Image (cartoon, rainbow, N blue to C red; front, side, top):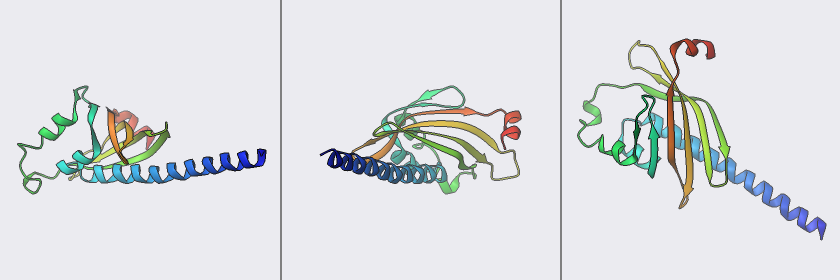
Amino acid sequence: MKRFVRTILLGLLFATAGAQAGDADEIRELLEYFLANAGVKSAHERFWADDLVYTSSRGTRTSREAILASFDNAPPVEEQPPGPVYSADDVELRWYGDTAVVAFKLVATPPNDGAVDYYFNTGTFVKRDGEWRVVAWQATKIPPAEDSEED
């Protein structure tokens, strides 16, 4: 009987680890897609949960509704000047059941020869109805002096 229980427990442990690995890939892909398409409304619609709390690097707090509304009066993407290209470095994932906390360094590379900006970002993803969505986000600009020390 002990062997049977041990086998069941080990099976559950490996199944959970396998699910987390698949979920980790899904979250990383979602993050990469979002960063590559940050200027596109549909990327925001997919990324943010309805009950999002977003705290910007400027110290302002906003909601998913406000973020999506900001696209309503904007010119079409093809008519806008090119913005920075975003990428994520040092991505860390931490698991809490159907919740994942993602911490990373956001790299904002301007389209010209301007200075690259760096931010620490922390996002809380929750899996609902089979989809990962962000319910909380915090961005903090890294001062330039720290940029050179960490890179």
